[in-house]
Image 1 (cartoon, one colour):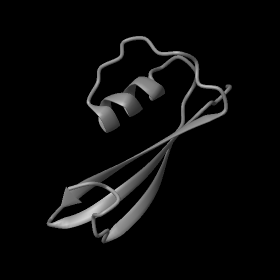
Image 2: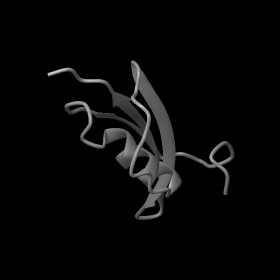
Image 3: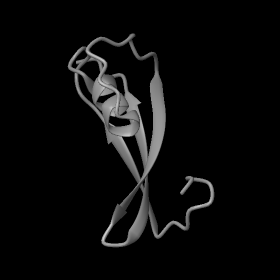
Image 4: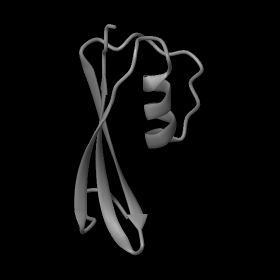
Length: 71
């Protein structure tokens, strides 16, 4: 089942926020690609990834934004 040919029942936009260096990008890569990256390059601006998941037989697309937050 590819993301382009999948019927979508819903789409959600998710924004990950937090101070720099806490692992937002590592969390995003782990969730979308299943790859553990203990170190990652610094995000400049924002990074976008998407993943389609199935919940109760419904296909849900998550559009996830990893943002830079300076606090």
